[in-house]
Amino acid sequence: LYATNFVTPDANVAGGLSVIDVSTAIKKGQQQSAVVRTVKTGCGPARVAVTPDNKTVWVTLRQSDAVLGYSASLLRSDPKTALKAKVMIGHEPVGIALANQGNRVLATDTDGPPAPSNGHNIAVVNTSAAMSGKSALVGYIKSGLSPHELAISPDGKLLYVTVRDSAQVQVIRLS
Image 1: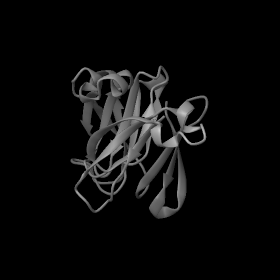
Image 2 (image 1 turned 90 degrees about the horizontal axis):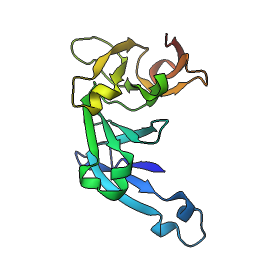
Image 3 (image 1 turned 90 degrees about the vertical axis):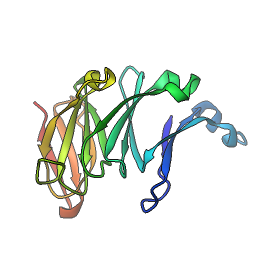
């Protein structure tokens, strides 16, 4: 299990990403030893998405305006080298989802316009390009004001977006 350690939204302090051993965490009296590792991230780590093959852990950084990609195995064995990708995506990303069998990261641009656009968006990131150190930001999908959380339909064809400032759920056809 991977969990973000957000710290506080007003502090410019690096948060963290913790790796938790679930089998230990569910044993009475052993919860204190369930955290296997914690790595520092940028400011405000918010949400986590794990690729279907369990090899990559993606994290949104709310105050750092980025999405990070970590090697799941290195988070446990060599956390200092686990960070494999950093993609600057826009203002205060929070929600995250994986589309196209994990080949795309979708992340909310929650509280402001990224350049050169002028509105609230869902950033689309090519995961293989990001993990190869190449330019990975594919583009943006327009959304309502302050998109916050994301979910993908079980068949992978629809993206559900909670749009906080208009109290709506937006449905986007991913094709």
